[in-house]
Image (cartoon, rainbow over all chains, first blue to last red; front, side, top):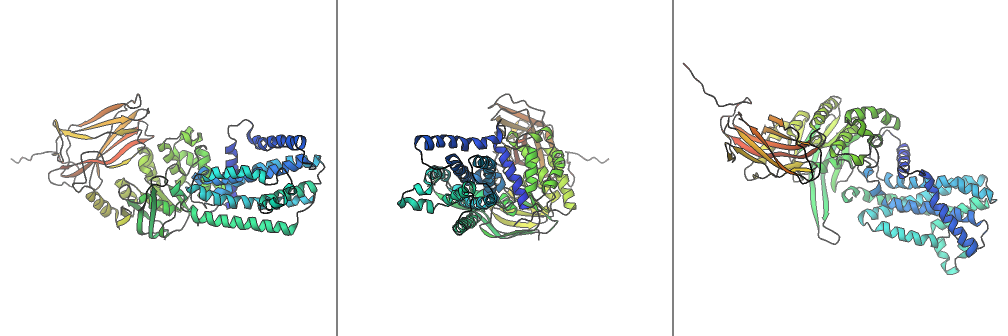
Length: 254
Length: 377
C-alpha cells in the first residue's frame, strides 16, 4: 500500500534492534538477563530430574537445555506477539504495513534464542555431542519455528485487541504447555494413549529436531519434518490473513 | 490524483462497557474529494464534523467502512499527537524511527536529524524521553519530522493550534515553501486565517458529510456566517475548545460602562473582558491572549497579558482586560481567548469564538471607524 524507499527488512532490523535495546535499557546486566531465565530453569530441573527423580536420559543437561531454550523462545514470543498491538501501539499510527508489529515483536524475542545458541552448542560440545555440518540445518528449524510463533501470535494478537483476556489465557495455556510438551522428558515417556499430545504439537516436533541436530548429530526425518514445516507455514499464512483482515480497525479499538 | 476519497464512510461502534448498549455512529459519510498533486485543500468544520477521521483514513492508519481511498506518493503527517511515538525513547530516537517509517533509508534518516532538531527548537529536550514531553513539545517534534522527510503528501490535523504562536507561524512559513516545491497537502484547522493563507480550496464538513467545497474566501465566509446564526450562541463559553486543559477558563463576561454587555457594543465605547480561570494542576506561569476578528477572520486586535504565576493546583483567579475604546466599523466581531504557558510551550485552553458582539453602524472598508464629526465652514 505504501511506496517506501527503505527496504522492509532494513526497517524491520532497525525496529527489532530498538525493541531489544529498549527491553534492557537502564539495566546493569543488560542482555545477560536473557540467560537468567533459561539457566535457572535448567539448574533446578536438572537437579530434580537427574538427582531426585532420575529420568535416565543421556546427556540430560544438554537435552534439557536445548528443550528449554527452544520453548522459552516459543513461549516468550507468543506472549509478546499477543500483546504487540498494545506494546507497539505507536507503529499502528504510522504509515507502515501493520503486520510489522507481531513480526518485530517475535523477532526481538528470537535474539534471546540466538544469544543462547552458542552456550547451548558449547554445552553440547563438552558433553560429547557431535557438532558438524548437520548444524547447518539449525537455521531451517529456526525459520519454521519463527513462522509458527508469528502465525499463532498474529491470530492471538487479533483476538487480544478485541478481548483483553486473551493474554492471560495464553499465559495459563503456556504454563501447562511447558509440561505437556516433551521439554523435560522424551516423547516416549508419554503413555500410549497420550501420545497424540506430542504428535499434534508442532513444538514437540521442533524440539525433537533441535535435539537430533545438536545432540545426536543427525538430521531429522526429512519427510516428517517437511510436514511440520508445511503445517507451520500454513499457520503463518493464516495468521497473516486474519491479522491483515482485522488490523485495519485496530486503531479504533486501542 | 494525489489523494482521492471515493464515497468514503467510516462507522464507529460505541460500546459503553462490556455487555452494555452498543450504538453505531457514522463519523464520516459519503465523502468524495480529490486533491490534485501540488494542491492544498483545507478541511473546516466543528468538532466532530469528521475532519480528523478523514485525515486518519487518508494516512492509512484506519480503513474506511465503505468507499475507497487512494493516495499516490509518500505520506507524512501530524495527526493524533504523540500516538505515533514511543514514550520511552528520546526525541532523537523517535525522529529517526519515524523518518524511516515514512520511507527514508537509515542513512537518509540520520542525515535529517540535525534539521529536525533545529526545526523543532526542542534543544536539549530533543535528547529526553518522550514521556517528559508536554503536548506543545509533541507538536514540535511531530511537525519537525513530518516536514523534514520529503514526503509527497502532508496531512496535518489541527497541529498548528496546539503549539505556541512563534512555532505555528514558522510552520506556516515552512508549509508555504513546501507548496512551492509541489507538495500536496490536506490540512484541518480551526484557524481560518491560516486556512485562507495556505489553501487553494476549502472543504466544509458538517456532521460527517461534505457540505460545500470551493474557494477559501467563499467557504470560510459561509462557514463563519452559519456559525453565528442567533440561537446557536449563548453567553456561556461553549465554543470550539483546544488545549491540554491543565488551566481552564471558567467563563467569559463582557461589560461596558459598568454594565454587562448584551449583543451590541457601540463603536468607540470601552470594553472590559473578564476571564475567570482555574488551574487544575500546578504549572509554570501563564499568560492570557485575547484577539478580536470579524466574520471573515480579519484580525483587529491581538493582545497578551503579562505572566501570571500559578502557585498551586486548584488556584482560581480572574484576569481582566480593559480596552479604553474600540473604534471598529459596523459588523459582527468575535473574541478568541487563550491561556498559554508563559514561554509559549503549551496551549492550556484556547476557545475559538468564545463570544461575539455586533457593532452597529455603517460597514467600513477600513479597519478603524472611530466616532467622528465633520465640520464645514
